Amino acid sequence: MLKLDIQLFAVPFRKTSKTSKRTRRTHYKISENNVTKCSKCGAVVRPHRVCKECGTYKGKEVIKKEEE
Ligand SMILES: [Zn+2]
Image (cartoon, rainbow, N blue to C red):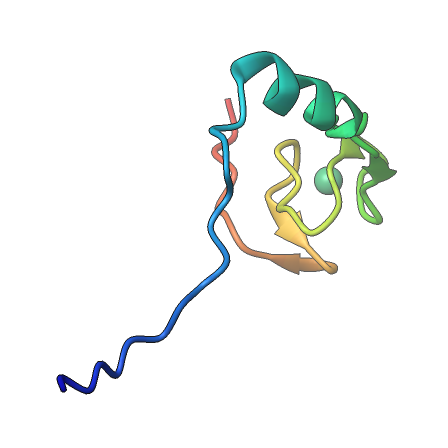
C-alpha cells in the first residue's frame, strides 16, 4: 500500500461573496485625522510629521525654509 503523508487543512466550503465580505468590513473605517499644534510656530500639523510652516520636528530644524 502507498503511504500518503499529506497534511490536511481546513478549507472554506464556499467562496465568500462580495456582499458578505463587504458587509463584514463595514466597521473598517478610516478614522478622522487627528492634528496637533507645532511647538515652534503653533501651526496645525499632523503628529509625527515635520511642520510644513517652519520645517521643524521636535523643535529642531529639519527642512531649510526658504524666505520669500
Ligand atoms: Zn512649525
